[in-house]
Figure (spheres, rainbow, N blue to C red):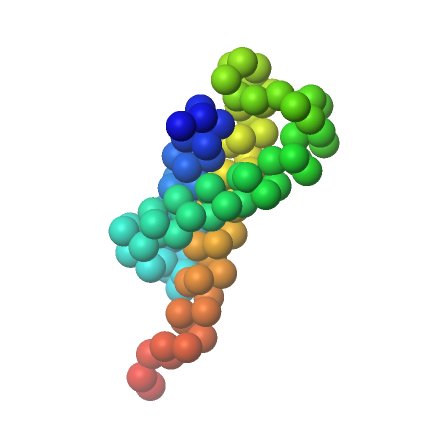
Length: 102
């Protein structure tokens, strides 16, 4: 398993739990926050990595296996951000669909 994917998964899980911690109306519980963060980190990191990497100065063909700090930062940003966004969106959908009884 490539190290950049591992970094994106861990960052995504942290981003998902950060989203749940920051907003009570988007909190899905730590298990679902983590699961959605992992999914968002993996998918978003792989899809957004080639876009975000060059924006912060990472060569297009670089991989985190070289342990270049900018490449690792790119994996952390894309994985964590994607995990946070996916968890927030799922929490907002849940709060719109399952409104509390008045």
